[in-house]
Length: 265
Image (cartoon, rainbow, N blue to C red; front, side):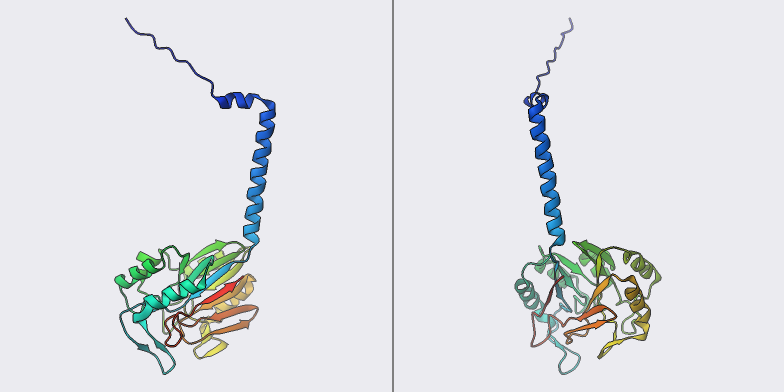
C-alpha cells in the first residue's frame, strides 16, 4: 500500500499583515521614509568635502642613505618609521595617494612591508621610476594607470615613469587614448603622477615634451589639480592655466621624515 502524504500550508503572519490595508499604508510610508533618508544621506555624503592625503617617495629599502645633493638626502632604511608617522599624524581622510617611488630598489620583501604598514588605510598607489612593474602590479596595484570616482571628484592615476630619465610624459598611445576618455566626465579631476611636468629645477615652466599633455588637461576643463613627487625637496603649489600643480616632498627626506600633504577639496 502506498502511503498518501498530505501537505498543509500554514499561512505566515506576514501574509495576514499584507491583507490589512492599514498595515500596507504603514509599510508604504516606512519604505518611502527609508528611501528618503537614504537619498538625503547620499546627498549629504556627496556634498561633503573630499579629504585626500598625499605621501611621496617613500623609497622603502635597506639602504641607509640615498644622496642626490647636499639638501636631497633620503633615508630609505627608516621607511617604516617615516610612513607610520605620516599615516598616524594625517588623521582621517577619504584617500591616501602614494605618489610613486614607493621602493628604493626592487624588493618583494619591502613591498609586502608597505602593504603591512598601510593595511586598513584607503591607499592609492602611483608607479614611480624606482618601482619595478612586476612588484607594483603583483602587490600594490594590478593596473599602472586607473581612476577612482569619489564624491564630486575623479582621481586619475597615470604612469609617466616608464621612460625616465628622458620622460616624454605619457609615451604609450594606449594610455593616452584611455586618458582622453576618462577626462570626459562632469566630475572635477585630480591627476596623480610621479614625475612633475615642469623643467627640472625650474617649477612653473612646462617641459616641451609635456606641452601636448598640458594642452589636453587644459582643454578638458575638468582638471583642477595635478600632484607629483620625484624631486624629493620641493614643496610648491603653482597655478598655471587654471590648474594647480602640487609638488610634494619625500616622506623620507632627511630633516623632514614623516612629511605628508593633506588637502580638503
